[in-house]
Image: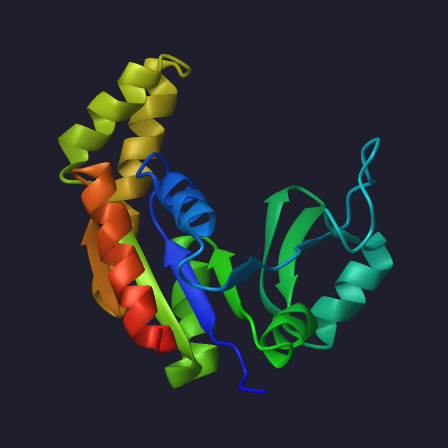
Length: 190
């Protein structure tokens, strides 16, 4: 059985990354599986170890970091970690499936470096920073200050785009989905 490949999709917040990934999963044109992330938080009601997350104790998470068992991890809040285990990616690709990683821009660059030609990295870019601001304002879910912070972060993250294999501008959602689909079909040989 042929091994699967690693698909990395990154974007600044509000650029439609999750919408694009979910549309591709629903289309089913490319065999993709999400990797299950690890965290050191407690499971919420109904969550199962190995299904929703790999729930690790603080000590287990720190040991895994020390043992270089993550392709990427982040301290999202002080003392609260999330990460992608190398063993999880290996499990999925060894089963012959492609694994899709919906990760931040820095993580995307690092994972691509780690997996080389076994991975494809795609950066989803807003048509412009101003268009992103209007999108975020249109959601009506955040303060002007929070939007300013997101836009400033997006400007910084966009500077990473040249380090990705492909950049797809999400100006028209259906067109962006089709463009990512075409890249993935070519990469996976479908």
